[in-house]
Image (cartoon, rainbow, N blue to C red; front, side):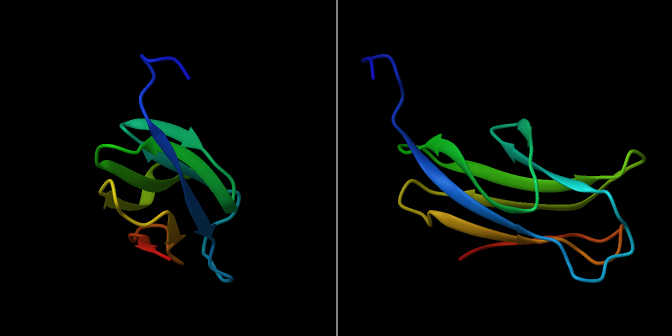
Length: 99
């Protein structure tokens, strides 16, 4: 790591799809620092700065509109794992919480 690189840490995000949902073929997108990262259901890890706060967001997209949006702000000493639960209906919000 060179002296110009920022200190980073990893955050684990578990993305849960409801067992009964009124939509199909929808995949989540994780947003960190305003940049979207396509994801899949299950456990994934992303890098965030370790010395400043970061906002982790998740939304679902079904080719027509975005739904299930939720955000969580992580402070430098905050949790290292989050859990996102998608909504069962395609027009409601999701939930993201520390694990």
